[in-house]
Length: 389
Ligand code: ADP
Ligand code: MG
Image (cartoon, rainbow, N blue to C red; front, side, top):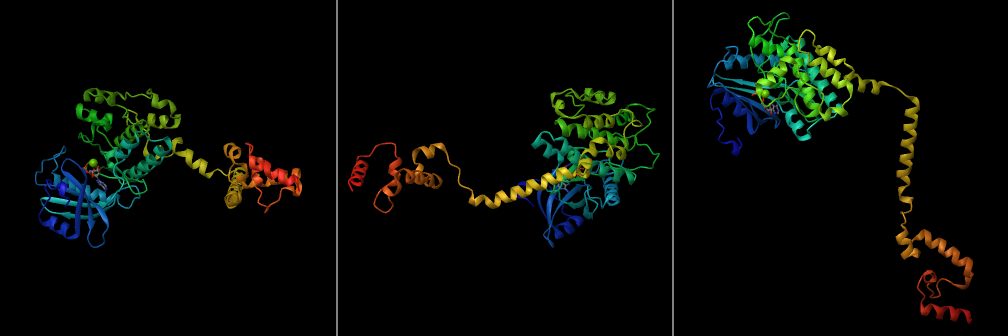
């Protein structure tokens, strides 16, 4: 247990004993309403994991009247159902008791997409495409299993060592039958779909289904591109009204440099009527996701040939680097031209043409002095002595 977190109450019964026998808890990675997530080391292997420790001792019923224990058991059930997908968090181990539950997950060293976005402020279209494609692929898998996530947001999208997505926090997720509708209000305000709010406000509301996750993807994608959410308002009531009316815009200056494809996809994700909203499968075939694939597949023999030539030229240049004369500046050439090997050869050649064998090497004469700008008195003597021979 990390010393700085000593004030944090750690469980000490049944499941806790088993957990501590197998794992060594380290620093806190994140917190939820009734859970703490800590990095931990598996003693036998030395591998690092993330343990979500859920406190059941103060167990109020949730929005659906379910106890925390029942909700956590449902979370475990769903985690097992969606397991085995590259973009969904893997549950490694579980320890259950009446007071605490420990869920041991694979560790995502790069933490939340939320924190990543906070450090970089906005993501390029290319990075947004990379992240959103993985989010949609994870969501397609979740929906194909008949599950609604209901709490999609950058805090619940983790990034592994290679900045690949791991969808997590299935605490609000529910298994739904194809025609079944949900009515309870759960999720995070800024990401709630209009039909979730309606279900909570009107007696005759139709309820909601998987489409709420698609709406949340629209909010996430908008936020990634410009660094601020589409419906945000400091007064929460105004924000909720904006959501109900689907009132957002691409008017901020940040949107000026963003192309049409991502805007078009966001328009199709943030559709108020869930029946008109794009499905996850259709979102994945939207032109926004086609750009990279098309470019990667396109074969252009001429461009490939040019690229090959460039590579060969670059290699030859690198190999010849040591034979390439060092660059000569005018400043150096002005001060002491004779010091530079290339110039020395030219100077000698000129000198030979002018003086022939008259100025010879090895006779104590300074040939460089012939090219010095300032006259030297001793030089005159050399000339005189040479002439007088
Ligand atoms: P809650 O239901 O309480 O929100 P989460 O499962 O979302 O619990 O976990 C809370 C936070 O803990 C996450 O937002 C994240 O910062 C951190 N966290 C959870 N799981 C992991 C993990 N596998 N690797 C790294 N950090 C994690
Ligand atoms: Mg969470």
